[in-house]
Image 1 (tube, rainbow, N blue to C red):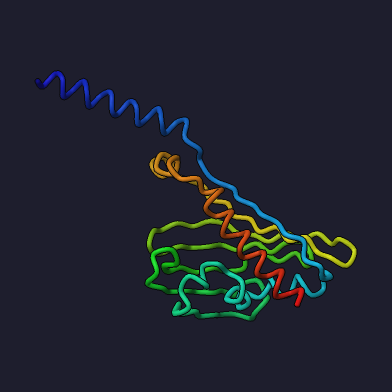
Image 2: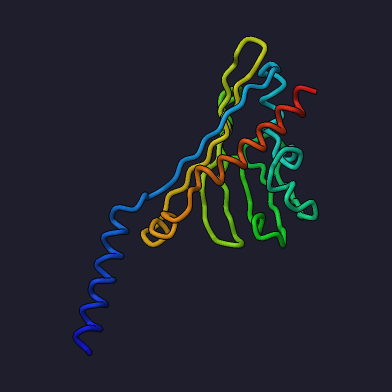
Length: 176
């Protein structure tokens, strides 16, 4: 019986190690929309973290979320903290790390609840005559065990659907 337990345990450990070696080490999700407005109107809208309350699918999930803003809006270093009891919203912060005017806005997301994680989010912009293409993206690296766990979730599908909702709502707001 001891041999069976030892061999069984060894097989499970080897299976976990092999799975961890081949599991994806991160994720990248992107969605885009074309907004029929010029870059001069679209870029500043997305550069303001405060505007996320208008189009974020997560803000819509819990209107009682507490939002706190620090720093100068639309500038590197400005930050947004949120706190919610909703399991899909949780608690965290987002800080603008880099702004390349009319090109890209890069932020760092720090999730505190319901799980701890740090990731990168960004908006990229392409001018199309009197319209603007907006790309909303997200990147996260996984640790060994997290990469195994995340094999069971299609984050591109889950996050992508939320990005599509948010971009569609932003498009409606900006085109009105």
